[in-house]
Amino acid sequence: MKNTTRLMDVIQRSLTGPLMEEDVFNRQVTRGIRRVVREYQIQVHPENIINQDDDLADRTWQAALDFLAACGVYNQSTSRVILYTLEELLSALADAPDQVWLGSGTDAVLERYRRVEDPLVPINMGSSIGSPVPEELFIPLMQSYIQEPLVDVTCPASLMTVHGQEIRVGSPLEILAAWEEVDLMRIALARAGRPGMAWTGLMLSMSDAGQLSAVNPAGLRSSDMHTFGIVSELKANFEILNKLTHSIRMGGIVDPYANPIYGGLGGGIDGQAVLITAAMIALSVVFMAACCGSSPTHPFNFNDTGKEVMQATSLAFQALARNSHLMTNLTITPVGGPGTKTLLYETAAFTIMSTVSGISRLLGPRSATGVVPAHFTGLEARFSGEILHAAARLDRGRAEELAQRAYACYVDQLDQKPYGLPFQEVYDLGTIQPTKAWKQMFDETLAELAQWGLHFG
Image (cartoon, rainbow, N blue to C red; front, top):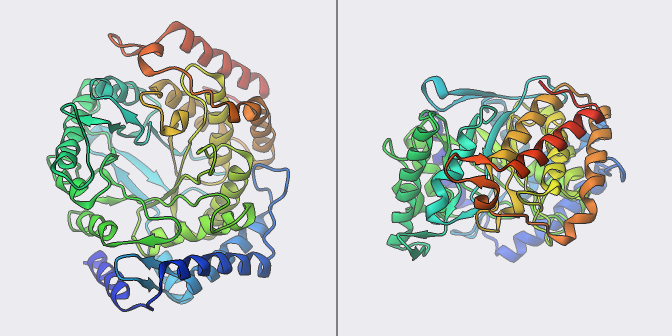
């Protein structure tokens, strides 16, 4: 099998690549990013949220390839660097898929590569993306997403306990929790009448044993997305490769992510843009991703809706969309939570930026930065779905105007951490519908965006 051959190649490079201490690799990343930023003259426009410069996007792509060919990916388990030449990177990228079916039966959807300013509407993965949830709220919370017509695929929240016990990584409790997540997801999908909808997992499992235990036809299916993250920056280990190996052998949809940290090894906006681009290339080449995902993280607010992160993200994903046919996704991680207009404005700005920059799938919103238990609802995924459809009609110039206007409505709130209200205070637990106040805020904000010039319906 083609993927097994490639997997064996990755393993061999993990075992035979250059030996290196991890802190030396970290310095190699930092020096490498600085070098290519200087040599390729990568300089993001200081005011624009959305990149308007095609030549800059193309130089960012070339800088990312140059950097990755020189730096590689570090395997923490072997202390070796997985290296590919520029020619090998380009050859593997040429073989990457440009479309994939997600889910089964009448609930299946086709995800496809998108260009910059592509009129094709991205896939909407409405979800809290692994945010913590009490056991008793898991089903109604997930049902609130799955039942939304504008949600195409989903991703479970993370159980905080299993049978009332705290979950410990690598213990039998993690395996029990993984199976509990699968069982509860099946119930939520059935109650919403969408049993074949694709979902990505397993969100609570950090170890390979926890995730792999529930990846099978009775659990996470081959038609679902098999998700794992790599370690920032550009690092893997055998646990991550074990997850990849199992997904490949069962024919699952490999759906990894990399979340470069703003201000970390990649430095500021310019270096961050190159590092994000390189990380997405690595996900495709080294980890055989069907779709390459990211949620670049702000080190203080833990969101990705700040201006600097959006600037770097827009440039990186335009570089990818203009120079490859990779399917890519971004996760909205706002500071605002349910019951706040801050959340809706953040969602609007990030969704507009992502859509015109060429992503194929949008994840979230992961409300309240994804750390406050049960502070997320399906209504904000309905909101992002509306924005996706409207933003697919925009060019970058008009998108910039709208993103800036939305950004101005929330920028002063980010440091205040307006986490909002928990699910049970903004949804009726009997009907699984938003309260009048939360729905009214949704309607008012959508009407305001329509007045700005976004066309809905």
